Amino acid sequence: MTTHTRPTGRGTGMHHRHIYLDGAWTASTGRCVIDVVEPATEQVIGSAPGGTPEDVDAAVRAARRAFAGWAETPAGERAAYLRRIAEGIERRAPDLAELIAREVGTPIGFARLAQVGLAALAFRTAADVGEAYPYEQPQGPSLLIREPFGVVGAITPWNYPLFQVAAKAAYALVVGNTVVIKPSEAAPLSVFVLAEIMDEAGLPAGVVNLVSGTGPVAGQALATHPDVDFVSFTGSTAVGRTITRAAADTVKRVALELGGKSPTVLLADADVADVVPRAVAAAFVNNGQTCCALTRLVVPRSRKGEVERAAAKAAESTQVGHPLLPGTQLGPLVSAGQRDRVLRHVRRALGQGATLITGGAEPPEDQPYGYYVRPTVLSDVTTAMDVQHEEVFGPVLVIECYEDDVEDDADAEAVALANATPYGLAAAVWSADPDRALAVARRIRAGQVEVNGGGFNPRAPFGGYRQSGNGREHGVFGLEEFLEVKSVQL
Ligand code: NAD
Image (cartoon, rainbow, N blue to C red; front, side, top):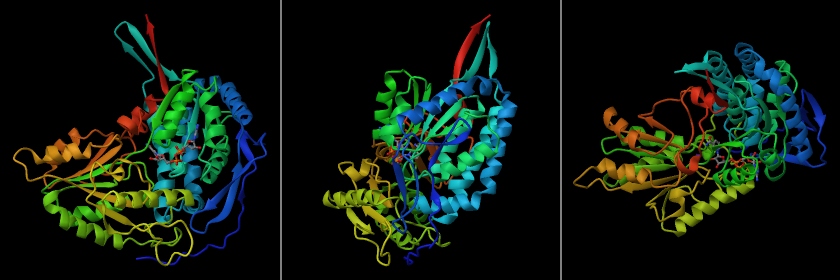
């Protein structure tokens, strides 16, 4: 089902000309300005400076100057700043949600809940975890001291533009690091609002700095800067590799939160009518542009027909439309490039033998403009096809079958197929028997596994196995990521 897109007719007052350096809004040293295009209307709605290596250097120097004072600030005081930032996000939540709905295409309800709500929650949770954390502990005759690295460079993607920055900045800051943020050039606008909120919260100058710009210029400058101690990166696996190489000369610490191709595993006793609509919704979350989206439905072959019918029904009842319309469940993709990439994946999958259950590579009816893609389900997908193991990053769910007509352990077949990609970010397992589902969850090689719909926990570590990355964000593990360990022998 689709609804007509409707341009908002709002003004274009989101053109930023300054970056946030050393506690002040400062002109970039570059002349380049990067436009931000609204995916629902294909119109420019804002812009941000294309920061230069000189801008990055000034930001890093400011962060370095601020480091000693911030690191010595008691953890409780640092936590209080974070709580003020959370309050600031909550105060401006309606504006932030609308901004992200416009710059990313996220449906407004989900933008409020996840894009903005989770960002505020990350600051609050980091404040609580950071305040309670034991930074010094005896170990035998030694004293273990955990202390901040110094200057952290945070390089983030466009899909959750505020939350991804929050996940890094909140935990880096609460333990005493100072931060230089390089947001995605595709969706930087909400991060400018965050910098305003941080400024209003009274953070000391230089503790947080914002340099917008492109990856190969501003991002690269941050990754190679000799006075950056730690680069925390969230984005694609390909860029994660580039950053790791760029950071190698200065032997800085690099944490990578990368892509995924995560499975929903349906065990033979699961309730198809209940699970499949949830699995479809989980694949299409944020228009399918979620690193941990569950984009593969791994099912017993004996239930294939039933699953295909339920998946078609769920996908076809997904409300496609303008992200600011309240009933919308699926908005446009972030850019024309991203839409075209997704459509290429769909065409290639069909060319390699996948069966189209619903959706496809034609533009959706009733959407005369905007970067929309039909909610798409492909079946008969095998490990020989690219779409089985390549991240699509759009509303495309693939159905893969494991053999359940086996003498031995059919769940072992399910596990083998679930693990048959180079990624390992997330997974879900469904069974009528919770113990059976948990046993399968233990065998899945992924950083986060939901059992029978287990919900989001802001303190649970999040991160990837294998080519999904090497870091953990959130909770105590996310906090410890930003701490060096010193052992003092007494
Ligand atoms: P991307 O890798 O293209 O860009 C991410 C960031 O890296 C941007 O800020 C970009 O400017 C910067 N960048 C690009 N080239 C660079 C370079 N050479 N040097 C330094 N920085 C550079 O990713 P994207 O398209 O913005 O985001 C989508 C990807 O992010 C998907 O693969 C998704 O799975 C992943 N992601 C992962 C997580 C996670 O927690 N694991 C969360 C969200 C998104």
